[in-house]
Image (tube, rainbow, N blue to C red; front, side):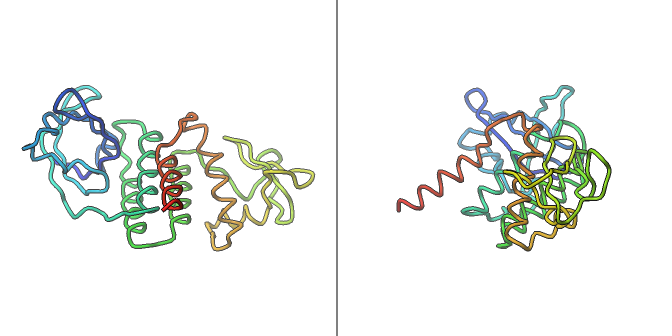
Length: 235
């Protein structure tokens, strides 16, 4: 049986093979050995790349399974520039946040749609924030943007709130560095990111909320994006 999949991470293994982490619609995240995939004449050479829709057949009893066959089920999703780094960022989120061998078919569809939006030129920041919020909710890490996590009172649009990881928003006596305006929280509850200042709050919240589950790992996609921006300025 073949499964719909995308490659989200790969690395060389022994002399001619690869260890490939894939995200499948039916079987969730899987770790595979692609034997001989780095040989010059391997049919897998050049196929096991990010953003290529694949059909994969694999088997094995342990966590590390053997890849038996792979074929493209469609053209590669064309991501370039900032959209490419953003796609790599999505891959890192899947790699670090999803436990292996657990189906997340809805996440698969959301991921696929987000990649296509990035490729079609949709605004990058809203695309990423929508996916991050979706991931937080689907994994049970979401918070209530309309209720004080300490008192249970409704968020006041004119108030200021601090975020406590894994709990939610707590009312503050006054504005202070890093505080969120109550009106921004109501916008986030509706995923209304049309205002620049609300979009900035959404990004800050996502980083705070995802941080504990990423375990402080430095994300390679962010480093590549920063390096790419520096390179473009020097040209």
